[in-house]
Image (tube, rainbow, N blue to C red; front, side, top):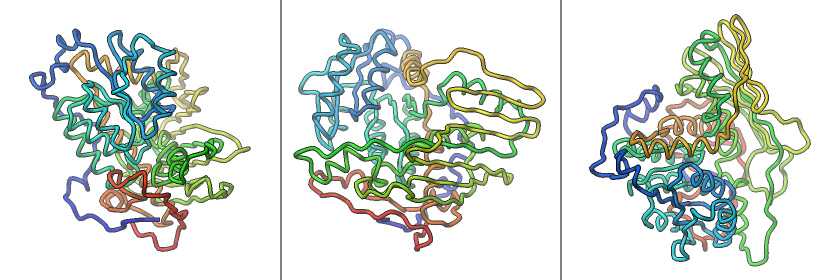
Length: 436
């Protein structure tokens, strides 16, 4: 399953990566280089948007971007498949027809479509391709001085994380906006309850846990004319070499909320288990259908995460935190509560967290003070990678060992070719020699 399992010996900066990810670096205005970063010029400019990855999430992100600002236009779209672009375009024309300005020559198809979108005169790019491509696309967007909405996760393996970390560093030097698809940090109820915990409402954190239990994923049936690789690409979430597996691709939201509680201080190590219990069909790739992981944070604080994708079982999306003077209990969509010496419940308004991401992204561009979620979005992604590698290997894996590893789950994004044929990477088997 693993193409490369050697450990990198590169510099100490990686070993101290994001120990204080919440610390903000000083921002140096670079309006002389990027005219739209200047508040005055930003107010006059139509912000042109390019969409990279035209599936359902990409289509949703584009709609939200077009609604986020009165003077925004979608001018370029790119995807591996032309029918994906057509479907997304038609949907967006029903939602915001006056703001969809995509000429035929700016509908780019193929593995190089991302670069063509970036080069099409856009100011903001929306990155919504399968996660394996995220480091490549993020790097290219930063190099081209574009503001970015970046879906989660931002990588699927440690080399990808290190690549994103470098791109984030450059984005801050260039004063670029980078808003993350970790949408739960943009939800009003979460901001209220997590904010109170961070301010000490339950005292010091003693332990925390999260659950992400849900049903199986949909499977797109094979269509006439599809190659075996086409089938895999169109069902990419079932293949860990494109998705990273279910914790990295989906349950990473739960790990992100745990990271939020901990002030984005990374865990020191992880141990866990997982496997394929009911997901037995070969056409459903090589991803697990359940995980259970223990994370150890500084001070021997334990975090526990449980995830599964199985049909006909109980669903749960929750985060619980025990503190020295109380407890936080969050059930996404229904309960946001603090119990203990100072009880509290959230009774305020809800919001569309997906829309808020884009509202705040475009407002920050207009203000000349661009948001940059880069550090914590990378930290949360790496927590999910650490958890996955611990379950895959069956070993206790340290943060430093995982972060500096060269372990990969499949081809690098630059190595993908549409004629390379399908990949038959076996399901991970804990205890069979995977070395991190």
